[in-house]
Length: 135
Image (cartoon, rainbow, N blue to C red; front, top):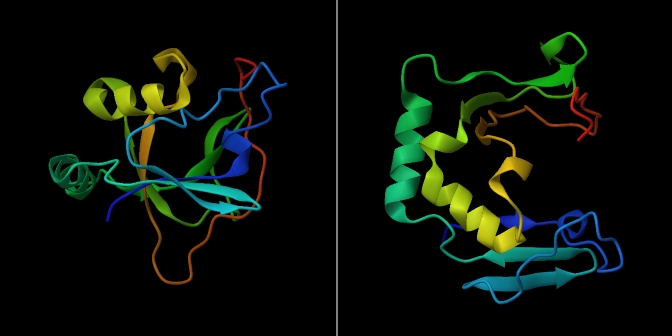
């Protein structure tokens, strides 16, 4: 099965109006764990969407060393050792629409889709990103 897991941080208390709630009526949504809350969306990606994303990541030099944002821009960091391929929203409109419906947000509130590859021994450690637009 293909799916996406969502940590509690994506579904904060309803008393926090600046965050979006997960649409609990979303098709295929399953609460896998309650402490911490982990959701699984069954069949979130269709087989065709998966194939397209895999092809995108396999194109030439699409995968590049991942980094973190800083005041100087995207920089390689020892907290993130994976490789990534960024897919602008215009390249994955059906996927972005699913995320919008799942989170009840506007497309402008979402980042670009990222395909991340971890080889043996690579990791993504806790860190802080920089944002010039205040988000």
